[in-house]
Image 1 (cartoon, rainbow, N blue to C red):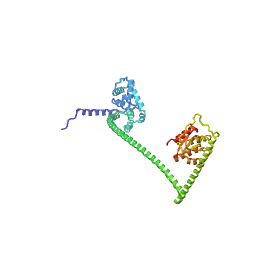
Image 2 (image 1 turned 180 degrees about the horizontal axis):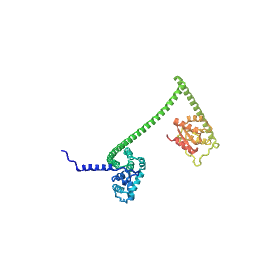
Image 3 (image 1 turned 90 degrees about the vertical axis):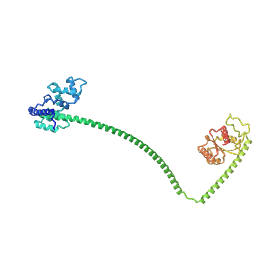
Image 4 (image 1 turned 135 degrees about the vertical axis):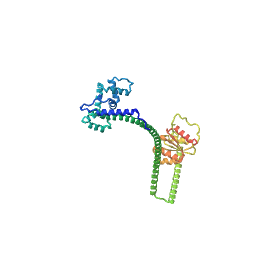
Length: 414
């Protein structure tokens, strides 16, 4: 059993038929004057204001010309006030008409050449889905050849676009929310990836630094080994160029050197004995003629020695290098009173370095007056004493007191 139709369905069908009958029965205007906003059907002002004018401009016009200054008025209330004011021929309606013509002058100029309804309808059909729909909408709706039927179709299309825009906006908001959630998740994942990247970069930097240190150490070691290799190559080349000697030749050469050393040693001993004999002769002469070789003390403040001195340096040979030539007899007396044998070298002033080497070989103890010797003599004394391991005292100021302190140092047990 079928249900009876609802009462409002029949009313809606009757109303739609009446509207279509009225629309198709309205003749097209024959003049060339563009249609005014207040001359359109009563439902046209709402979509025109809502689609063709931005809300900030609508609020500005309402506040300036309609005294619509309530701060708490919503956008819908302002929209309704402007729509009502545009339904009648008034100064405000004319102002809105001028605003619309000025905003969409390019679109209005594009349809001025259309002289028939069919051309205007073809233009509308072609451009109703264009991106500049507000301009196309106003230029077609205000065209002189837009009759009631076309007006009904244009307003219906705009009405459905607004519905679709609402649905699309809701869908867009939902999609936007989903995208925002995806963006948050992506940002969180990106942050984790950044942290991981920073950790990996830090690890890579540390590894690279360690590798660089290892490379530097290896380069240093390689340079050292290269130097050693060059030294070995040089030694090898020298060994190749040096004539080879047999073991018998080397043994013979060693024997010759030993014999030469023994001969030199004997010669030095003879020279030393001769020097000692000459010294004794000179001492005897000095004892016989004390007034002729009397030596004044170098320092008046030093008291004369009244007691016999001990002889801790007895049977030892003391070499004094440097000093004033006039004070050499005083040095000799000071050394020999302690039981030691005195030898002297002027430190390279007049005597040669070869004589210094001979005296160094015979000396048991050395006193070097560093301020009165040449540099060569100073280093020769230093190297010889270090090599032989004999005791050497360095004196800066050549004086009797300094010589005594040096002798005390030499007499002290090592």
